[in-house]
Length: 111
Image 1 (tube, one colour):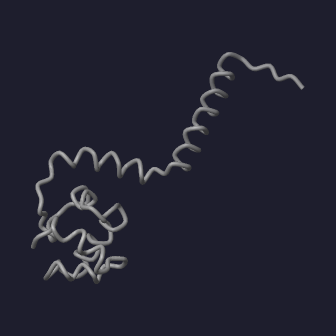
Image 2 (cartoon, one colour; image 1 turned 120 degrees about the vertical axis):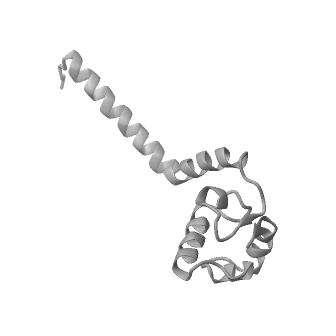
């Protein structure tokens, strides 16, 4: 079976194939990790530690050892829903943060 395509049809087919490959790459690697790395690298040079736990942005939080994108989001949600943190130890109320993770993060935070 032979398909004759015009020049525009070939370009369209190439574009669709290329777009599909990009989609597969992003799905496989993960866009969240790509965004995390982009934000993380840019923010590292601008952050001054320790950070105020009640004021730190998402981009700042993800640069603390032990905190990645999902933990940063959980911390911000907890802070919003509970009117902020009263102590650094209150981080243990955030899902997934226990004594071990808190010990790693504590030197980088203040109130």
